[in-house]
Length: 118
Image (cartoon, rainbow, N blue to C red; front, top):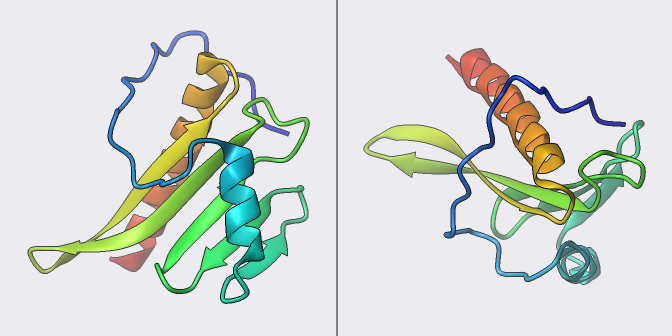
């Protein structure tokens, strides 16, 4: 279950470019789940996670009941100029405020990962 969207934070700017080649969350889940090269798991709190081994990406699908359901977050490492960056793309079919909160939560997780690598 997600947290309540923060009323004080303004809406996030939406990017039209994405690294997700699917139109919907359901399409992404079906395609990624059916690829036998991928590793599929479920977290204790209901998130459906697919590790896409070929693309070295992790896809996190929000569980039913989550504020941002249905949504998928794709995260992957990218190397630029000798440094590694954690990139993220999102398809979120919920209300914008809920989707923005989801993105903020994943940005915080990404920062923790980045700071742990240093």
